[in-house]
Structures are given as C-alpha cells and as structure tokens.
Length: 275
Image (cartoon, rainbow, N blue to C red):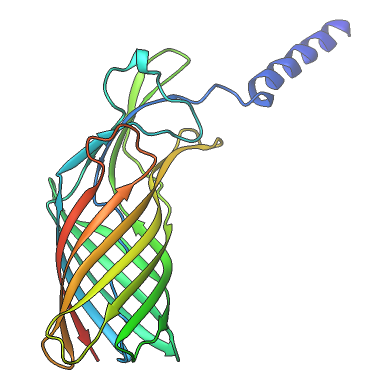
C-alpha cells in the first residue's frame, strides 16, 4: 500500500512540475524577416457627396529598413549572442488601394477599403480597412474629417526562434495577425476660385507585426509597433464629380530601436469619384 502511495505521489509531483509550472519555457526570439507595407489610413476628404469612391497608386522609399524590436511572450536573444539586428522589413515596389465611403446619417459615414501591393513573389492581397467617419464643416471652405477604424495588413513573415531545451534554431512562417486600430484627422480646403487646394492628414495606428502560437495550449509570441503618419498634399477638381489628389506619406514607426531609416516615405496619386 505504501508503495502505491509513493508511486502516486511521484506521478502527482511530475505532473505538477511539468504542467503546474507552465511546462517547457517558450523559445527565444532571434530575428524576423518581414515583407509588406506599413499601415496607412485611407484618405477621404470631407465633402457633400453621398458616396465617395477612390483609387490610389503609391510607391515606397527606402526599399527596406532594419532595426531592433521587442517581443511579448518571450525574451529576445541578447546582443552578445547576435551581432545583427533582429528585424529586416522589406517594402513593396508599389501599392494599389481602392475604397468607398457612404453617408449614413447627417455628418456620419461608414467606409471600407481593399489593398494590393507588388512584392518579390508578385501581386499580393495586402488587407483591408473599415470604420466610421465624422464629417466636420463638410460644406465650408475649410473642412475636417475624423476617421476611426481597424486595419488588417497581411505581411509575409519568417521568424527565427531558439529552443531553450536543446539550443536548436527553427523558423516559422505562419502569422496569426490581428487587425490594428487607427485614427486619422484630415483637414482640407475647398475654395471654388482656387485651382489647387491643399490638405493635411495626421494618423495614428497600432500596427501588429506578427503573432505566432508556439504551442497549441500556450500563449503566443508577438510584436507590434505604433506608427504616426503625416500626409500633406494637394487636390485638383477636374469636374464636380472627380478630384485628383497628389500627396506624400511621412511614416514614423516607433518601437524600433536603432533603425536604418528614421521614416518611411511614399508618394501617391489618387482619384476620388463623387456620386
């Protein structure tokens, strides 16, 4: 009887140490290769139209940035174990966005947008945006629009991890990325006697880079950054129903230490169709 009790006690101790203490430690984060665009809030202007449809073509520079990022859910390999930076982020050659904004009630609108981009492996579906807008002074010479929404951006990701149990490296490519919230404020002019009217958009976004479940019953290893974007530009009204827009995005990503470039730039051409 005492032998049985000892065996049961040892079994209980084993399961307590294995599962009660969380099981094996999570792998360490070594580095991540990411391919895809940074988040950019869609550009809509405050207007009196019931429906606005836009198409946008943009180009990025530099072609990539690198730096060091922190992760949640585990620790990173120390600098003494790794000489290179742990993030290499490549941007697409070009991106194409299309979206629609529909007036719902008085100054409120709902909007949605789809995104494509050109990467090394061809044309890729980037993601989508959706949200709610508040139009301020939409029929005045100086107008403003506040957009609140969520953005999903699909990034090609290859992350290298280090198992603590046997010090072996392995790579993962699956990315359980969640949408990130964003807010943007767009101020524009609409003087009828001006051939060209300026605008300025400021946006703030929480941008998930990657999320990887390292065990089916455990937490995930993830990383996210925040981006602040300034977008100045000009508009030219071809007719009552068509507006041509030229602008530049100045994207400032935070949470990246020692980046090779302080900012990401993209120039774009956009057409708004007012219905």
